[in-house]
Length: 149
Image 1: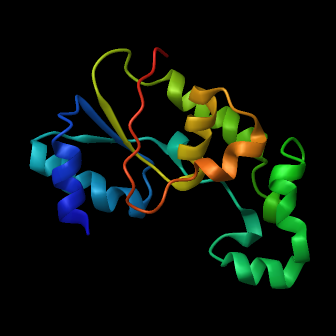
Image 2 (image 1 turned 90 degrees about the vertical axis):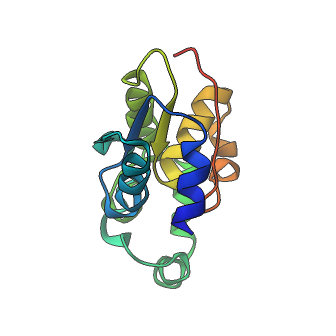
């Protein structure tokens, strides 16, 4: 699955490759950078949400253990800490900061996780929190955006 994605991303002719610094994103960022003869930049701001004690558990397992507690991520984005982790607002603010640190010109490829990508799309589209779950991309999906940030 990685080789076709590397080819697809390389065709975008990026000026910079940024990834979340996690193994899942590094597994794509490093082959892409080698293919293009570039280096990639690990940036922890693009990490997935901190899910605290929920980290690594399936949604089904969390639901079985906590009922509909996970709804708090959308119903109370300012205060709900999933598994004691990061609120939706904190994730959104972190991604806004990450977006502000992007190069002002050129093409940047950001290899990140569903939550941060959804937050970037939410910010760029000026959507409300209610849309967040609809903005999470599928695994391996390429999202292209143009921004004047």
